[in-house]
Image (cartoon, rainbow, N blue to C red; front, side, top):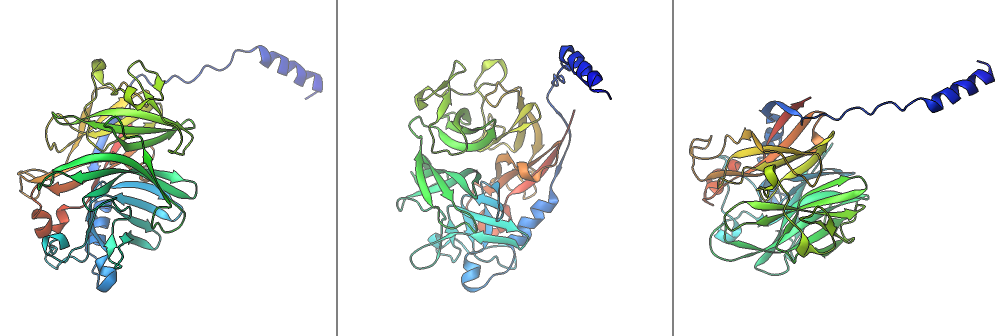
Length: 386
């Protein structure tokens, strides 16, 4: 093509209107189907039941809750809070925990690193060389439970919530503060640092971490005396959670003061009611909130709500899955068995799909000794469309 024609075409193109932007969908994705992920369920069941012996057996994961995950260069890292270790009996039971007179080691947080070599349990060690929590509590009666984690350079970071016991019952605990544990590359061991995080407003931060647009959004939950939690949001420029935080306010702005953090809204401007752990993940033009139904105590329902923004407002939450293990009519035929704290595992899902975990436990502590298989994560997949 002669140069003059090229110049002429360029001049014409300069005056052409830009192509119209692709219209954003007016409605959030639809749920086309939901089904249990038996493959993931069975993988953890097999690993929990793998026989162990001697020192290696004492540090072997046989069950845990929280069940966050983060991809790392060393493999898929599964993040757990309360964790049973040791070896299961042939009948599927376990010995009681050491603190209850048995032989089962029990720690308040652990990892399972899963890569091409298979799964491997990661715990800390006490002075006698016995399994201990990866992140040790500051005192005998205080401990750290895990929250969400994110990649951090060649390593990763995890938010932890510090708790203390307030009575003899399994639910007699109180939150005391938040902290950030940072881990280096390779096989995770002790954190290379443990940094206090904002904790002055009664908000348990780290229920979810979402990186978007050069920022990290930090979701936190505020426990209500009437049950359920109100959801709060903070953000950090970049990916280092040790940098200054700013908090979403009631006016829709961002403040440097944690005391000005306001609950995020649902339909009609009312404050959202959520579970303690959850997820808020971007899918196309929409953000998917995965939460347990919170207006019914120990509900087995996982709900899904959508928003255009990480800060909401979120639309009506719809039940997408009911845990079959829970309640007197569930698979264990046990009214004490509960399901709780669902959230998404982004790195495991395909396009147009959510992979969600939830925890199963019992309000009667002896149940998870007699039937060890109760206390393991379960998974399901949500298929989305247009």
